[in-house]
Image 1 (cartoon, rainbow, N blue to C red):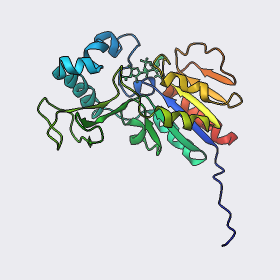
Image 2 (image 1 turned 180 degrees about the horizontal axis):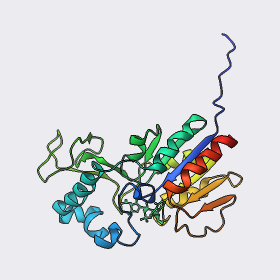
Image 3 (image 1 turned 45 degrees about the horizontal axis):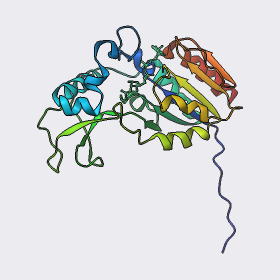
Length: 239
Ligand code: OAD
């Protein structure tokens, strides 16, 4: 038996929770701003298991349109800034977004809490997940077990399978950031409460509400693409 030492990862860990505002400057509508997606579509008609039961065609069409748009947009300056943090930090992104703009910008660790637009899955076996290279799924498109494919999205009323993993990640933060989310959808909005009180926290959102009871929180009421390049420079400098 040899005595060995293991090398501890000494990089500081930054955990970043992002929402729809992160992708707004790429041209993707948020949900709850003026003219947001939920102003023009009813959640109950397109984003619930009941909607899928009642009118799968309408649900597929809603997500087909989102997916079509996703093939046409690009990551923005905010996404790109977060990639630079990896030069010096162990960065974990937890996103509520179903787009792949963090990955396309180059971020290496991204956890999707609410699913992914470019994936679909079987309706009889939730482990049968397929990556799409095109935007449209139709009624009649089936998995290898012969069941209709559905969007790989967590709908309202469904459990959030990744939340326990996300909670454990958040507890390990040395720095925590929240970017572009109205913080009204749970359980995602509750993640900030698992961050240790002494940890520095940043909240970047032009309409950031005043958060009560969160210690060491710095609020930047700016767009992600405006605030993040400077904030990232500062964090890289301070180490
Ligand atoms: P919301 O639409 O609720 O909130 C978007 C936030 O982004 C708002 O607080 C805006 O002020 C902010 N914002 C707008 N432009 C911005 C910019 N350029 N830079 C930074 N922030 C900006 O979206 P989410 O909080 O992401 O879930 O919504 C959470 C969940 O509700 C979504 O994941 C989705 C939705 O229903 C599902 O569909 C399951």
